[in-house]
Length: 325
Image 1 (cartoon, rainbow, N blue to C red):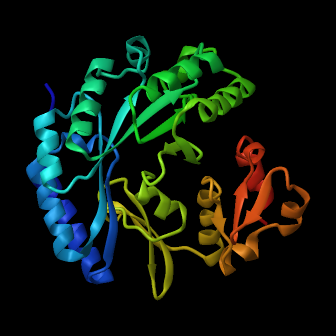
Image 2 (image 1 turned 90 degrees about the vertical axis):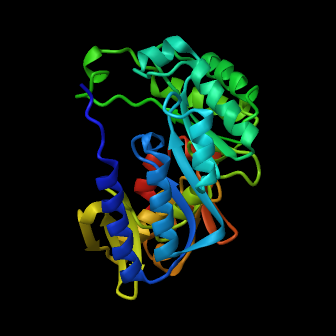
């Protein structure tokens, strides 16, 4: 028998955390709010409203604040989605994963393509911003498979989507199945095929959007802005007069970050984006400028930023090792 979550306890814990950080940081301006991790669309809308009211009490929510709710098809119908929208959600991220029912079953997803399309359609009719997540690189996938997938996505008329490469960890159920996965070269071909086929423009390694529909929350984080992680397992990076701190929700961690460690994080996240990492005094100190000058085919400097070239993106992990002193 499934155990029903104690939503009152959950909401109270979240609200206590918000009150704590409101006291520590003061009435800071909040440009974006992201409800993610797990399936937050499972929570009662009354719980969501309670949390939003507490955020508004402890901080200053910007008038144009981007409020994203992650959801999985099957956990959200049109009626509940409307309640979330009326409580403040203006951006919905939907874990579609595939437009093939056989692939969804392979990945252990409980929803069908019909469920996913129904939720995307309902959200579109409400006029809110919508994003969808997809996974590629499954056993048997080729560049042609991904091209077909992207053409199907194009027909949905999405303004934002995320394309994630399937990775297999050794001790997971998939890892123990001995699956024959695509090679690195095949994965690179698929990645290139996505950029060539999707109607949306890539603005980060795995994210594509129509102009003006990029996820502002993620862009802020990738650009090195501070953020608070609320709830168990949530991570944050908080800036005070004492410097940067690594923070985790539910009081799990709050420890200082050295300027070099924070600058390294900013380079790693910034280089994932098309616009690249800002060249600021802290990042400039730890960039290997000799390597940059010797590899114009992989990295370039423009508008006071460093960004990867199309060839550099395909070898980003290796490039970061060389880029940071």
